[in-house]
Length: 451
Image (cartoon, rainbow, N blue to C red; front, side, top):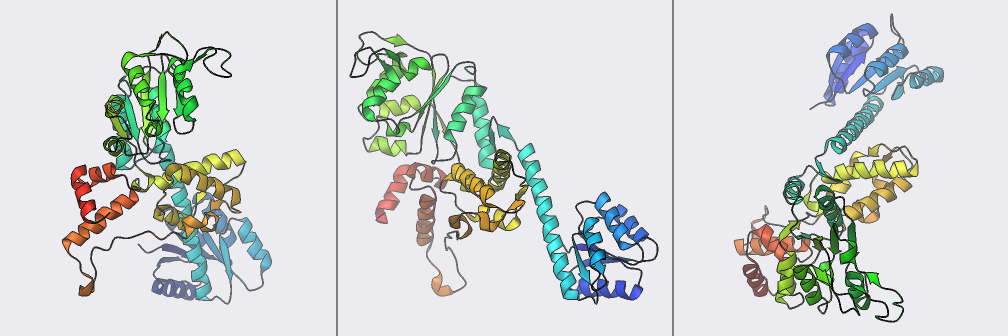
């Protein structure tokens, strides 16, 4: 739609000339011969900008500017002043004018000022929209999102929260798998119990068994006193095993037995200790492929895979990127003690175009950096990391205007499947699920293509 401009000028020739010239530039203009008539029009219609002359019969343009700012603070006002009248220009800015242009009037200069005013108004509206989106976004505990994948996730979490069934949270690194686990704990019947988390890939293998199951005094060097393992520490609550796919093969049967018997034997002890916990495991690995390759025990997989929960990657969540970005801007600005309202339109386009291989974690780091660097009230394109502002989204060519570039349906299928695998960082199980294929069919196709 064309931007609507209200012109206030008591000279008919000037008003009609501006209406015609700006109309040729794609603007929908309405001319009023006085400030009072302009205010009446503002009470009835919404305008993207107001252009007013300073000297008019009755109410002057400066007073009109102040009235417009009071009634419609989101509507920018551009004041036309006499050449060299700096005092008038200063008075206009104090009254809240967005900009001013001088006489003799150059229509190109007025158009440029209007285009900038339109952009600023659009950005303010976008900031308001994003703030409303953050406030009104449907959520599950601390997670927010309005995209279909997140709504499906929230619905599933709502159904499984009250259960004691083991949950396997699957998703790429940085998607928020621990947030899912904590949400399930807080929304479940064990919320009053402890939430204990461990990253299986971050603890050296010799220490991991002691961390999980505990140890008796003197079980090994430096074990001067007995220590409860995480299973016992989480008794009555939730135990979260992050990156369970990296659990050493030698420990997997011990974990399986602990889950089956609901008891652990501390290292160096001859007695068992009972516990009752809800187990939530998480992984970014393709555990089904690891089972087939012998890297993960099948019986343990079935034990922890009672309810699978897939957390979507950020690139699959559409405009959730901007909702999360606005939320992070507000949080980071508050922590830094700065007044930053949101992100510019150009920065928003870059955020949407980027693939976010690091997912929500990478987005938060990006926004935290931008808030620290920006010199303005909004995050701009220049405040974003080079990898984000210089990113060019990859495309899959499935058709072309040049007949010599047409390809067969088999080639279209090959390119699309490989693009899905690339987007999922090689996770064949997730790719097969998205493509509607069983994994063996997908494996056969990849083998045929030499992938």
